[in-house]
Length: 154
Image 1 (tube, rainbow, N blue to C red):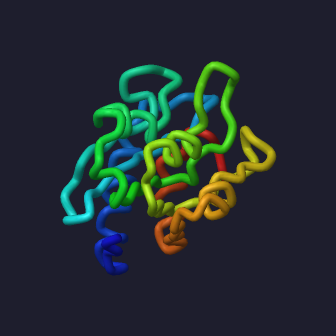
Image 2: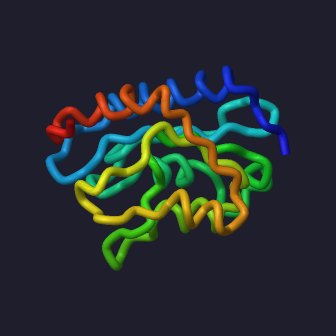
């Protein structure tokens, strides 16, 4: 598996954060951006929360732009400005599960989900337990939070 250097991780995460700024603000939802990057360093897909549907998450939007079973996902990295969700309403698949089903081996996040809507998001833990390489970029957490100023988070 190709592992980008820290500068590349920071560059792609900034792209995800820029996408989060495109989200239509919603009182009951985070604004998140996600980018899926191939092993060769090219962008495969990108998305942001509520891009095509008011209940759509960023990872869901990005993954939805690729064919199911796309072999490039087996060596890809997904960059998400917020920790992938570990639970959703009964009719929606959590993003953590979507990432695992897609077979993406590496996830990079800027910000852990705070207990604002869900008391205990365990996306990072679920991914790590499944053998996914999870990287946090805490130096970009404040930028990821800024896209969520509509929520009044401090």
